[in-house]
Length: 357
Image (cartoon, rainbow, N blue to C red; front, side):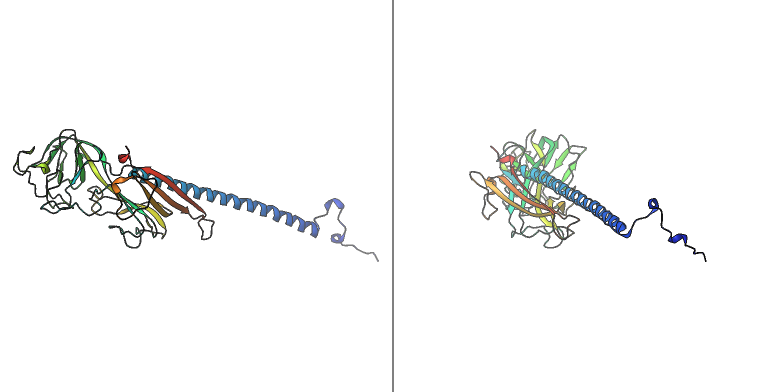
């Protein structure tokens, strides 16, 4: 009887044999090693890219914070015409006697610079929620006159009217400052006429805070009527009824605050709060400049001092010549788990230009 052998059981020729089980396992192991190495390189590159992106955002935030805030500090207490001249502020006073200047920070030039420590209250800042102050952080308030390119041609005190070289962007309700080499005055526009190129500063309560008098002289006398022909010739025209001469400057009155507040995401952001006028509306709203700000600490160099000191009650803010700012920023890496992967502390010192000899 002949024995039949199945072709499938025949030994394959040596050149046609496949992988053995051991060889297949080794190949799989090598493949896994290669894939694992490639995956590790990919994850490392992804982390490096994410860290670089986060660092770039922190640096950009730092640059924005420095440029905008430093500019406001540098221009603090600025009166374009001259340094250390008296300022007559007729805003928001009572209509009789020599009432004190307005206490509302938006309209009170004060000393040009005012610092706030963490426990100091700030009006117009929300007590809680978005825009409220971040705990443990400092804040600063700055006032100045911002150049507008407007010059006086004539000024008639009894009619409370400036004839100027241009008035196109000035609107009713704007807060302005006029100055010469002897003094400056802060007032509210009651009528701006582009056709006649005039700016009027009548007394009245039609605007907020309003002018207590049309007289712009120093010291302020809210009872002055300026009823004569101008130039001090009228019965009530005394020093309070000053008339500004040709080429006196009219500038915008600027009030700004910088502080760290809570943002909509629950973290910290650097906020700027601007004086309201006819262009921005009557409500002062904080503007979020950059997020990811954890802290801001401020210290001040007074004239004649050797070192910077924090804000304190009774400090002579007229003597502040420079401000040191320390801002801590951070960004959460998208690959991190609940930790701030990138943080940066920005340190800079800004000299108040108007107080440099």
